[in-house]
Length: 382
Image 1 (cartoon, rainbow, N blue to C red):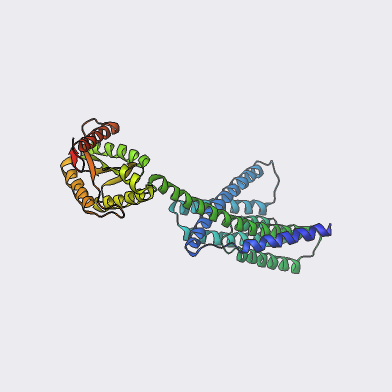
Image 2: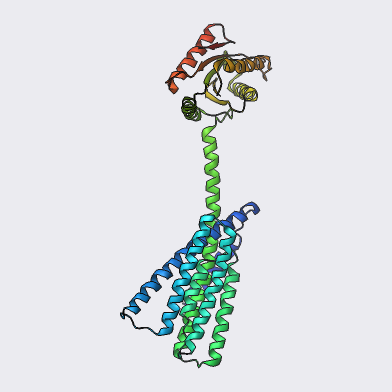
């Protein structure tokens, strides 16, 4: 039995040592504190509502003579009912306002008030010839289930308050069996909640770090899912959804929308002659030129292979032609690494009334093939 107890203590010590190593980056520390305070405030709100409901039911049972109770117990129940109801309203208000600083102060004062009421209750029972630590047990639940970051300070404060009340009670009241049992029960609850609070705090920190890393990974995946890995432009899935959205906006607000399809001329020859690695570098350079020439409102994406697409928002086909011509001249004048100069062909189509996404894409694609049939290195408008 003793051997098993030693093993359990060693394992607990190891767990505490590991938990002490849990640390947060400085930029996450404030977020963790805010998250902890908000979570503790919600837990405290539930506790206060629970106290209000339980004490109200007990008071009604006493008033209807179903339960017998002393007058001083009824007084304490009435105090707890109004106190818990008032605190619940205050906490609920600050949670809606997301006032972390105010909630932190409410939690701290709630700890102080719960221990003060526990001391008052214990002192008050002395006049009736018995000492009860039931108030301290309730106070322990409030303190250790709504801990804040400095949990050991709360533990120390609770132990000091409990010890002071016990010393005072012993000084004026004899230690009979009832009181010894009360003290043992209260001390056992303190030890249990101290250990549970510490482990719960470290577990909460671990979960916070895991949740932060998961959210960060999800954000990165969301970004990656919308971008073309090679060029850094929007991918086909993102382009399709953006076009549907922009068509709805253009239709509703009666503004022009122009779609441009761009295809690099004879790119297959580049891959066949120089290899796909060089071809990938050409695509990257080409995408960088398009991005540099585009406006902030333009939406650029890689349609697939050597085909690219540009959505010119709030732009007529005449204005889009000027933009794409500037891109064409810039590409034509650029010396690409390892292969020299290249050109592209483009097709332009402006959104028409009652036109859907496949319709305008089909018209822009036909204009592109018309440009290719016309000798390439040119732009056709439909």
